[in-house]
Amino acid sequence: VGSLRAGYGLVQALKLVAQEMPSPSQDEYTRVVNEISLGYSLHEALAHLVERMESEDLMMVVTAINIQNEVGGNLGNILDSIADKLLVAGALFGLVSVGRAWAWAGFVIIGREIAISGFRGVAAMDGVIVPPSIWGKVKANVQFLAIFMALLRTTHTYGGLYPDEWMMIAAVAVTVMSGAQYLARFVRVLRSD
Image (cartoon, rainbow, N blue to C red; front, side):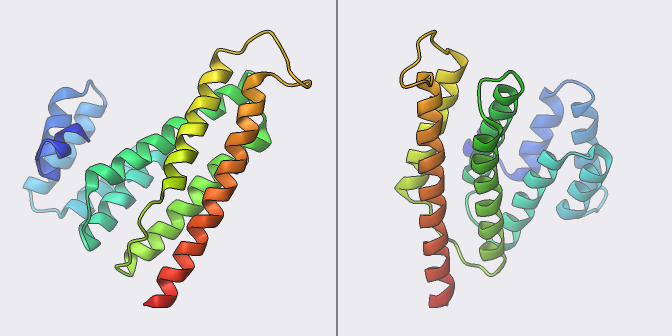
């Protein structure tokens, strides 16, 4: 993402990734760059990468790249958004596994992210961009704070819950509100077209 923000094109950024990453990632991205230089389209080379790597996270990134190539937009911003979602999902999976977060809270937060990403993808395929709102930023910050507090859990409870659990409840509430607000804007934008 940093190389894209620095003004590199996507293929140049992939070359930089191929040079900087350790093996086996270096080998895979070198293969993508080589396939492009041999005449495969970017879409085909990335599809081959997804087939070889068998990673759902990579599939999400490649899908975003393909949509961006078709409809335009700032790929750096798109990839930043995906990175934030993967960071939150990974942290929640880890916290659930050690008993520091509820599975239902993780399900709501991650489910919202998947649903909204799907709606964005559908809209983007029709050339429609539903811009983010302030609720998305508030949601992300409350989620990050809840995760941070869960990592640094105190020994005191208030009303039977740890402070991070109260913050996780707030994160779930803001997540649901921001999802509903996005869905309402999504419907309005699609109806206006």
